[in-house]
Image (cartoon, rainbow, N blue to C red; front, side):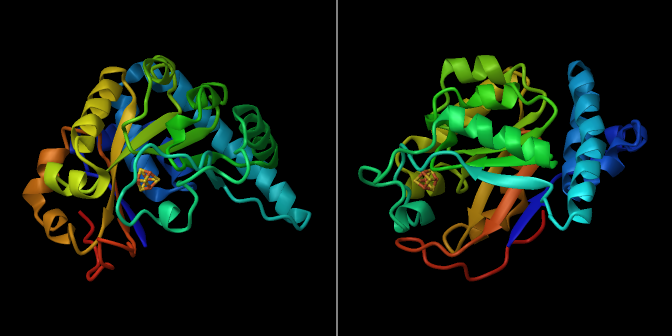
Length: 270
Ligand code: SF4
């Protein structure tokens, strides 16, 4: 079960609900998405042209998918792309690690950035509107941010451990009004470093700071398990993290093998 949550801001919600009907269009992709993106654009007007382009594409891509459906082909509005199986961390209970995709030498080389351009281009032609980018660690695929920059009429939601972004990535991302970067945390420093390795919390927060300085919309992703459920049930802890990222948080309730026992309770919507 995944739940994407955000905080309502009455100062911007009123305006955003009237901003060219964008909210309704984006809700077609994800109802929560519009409540994050539209207020953010209101606060960052330099991204408005790019955002309007995205809004236009939503309608176009929906029509493309409708034509495909009429021909018997159902095209999803968004795709999940695991762009690399490489990762620089070895988190306890990592699902990818448990099935052997991030450790050892890969049996086959992964797809190249050029291959991913081909896949995204084909998906765009089919009417896919948004891409959820995952790994491994996506920023270990050199130049991956170029893929987002070069498809400005599609939305990219990138999940990263926050420890592998290069200066060149920030340079490119600062010009991507179509990209949300979501950094994974477990909770505070102790919880995060216990599962992800010493120093990871500090690096992840540093990346969030640099992304925010570059004007990139950011968020935090959390896998809720028995080790951190109490932490995330405490509103004060959530309040403290809100200034760290923008208004996007993903709570993922998932079984974690290894040191982290399976989830024992359902995460609340915050
Ligand atoms: S950062 Fe993600 S892919 Fe890498 S080891 Fe941790 S959980 Fe696995």
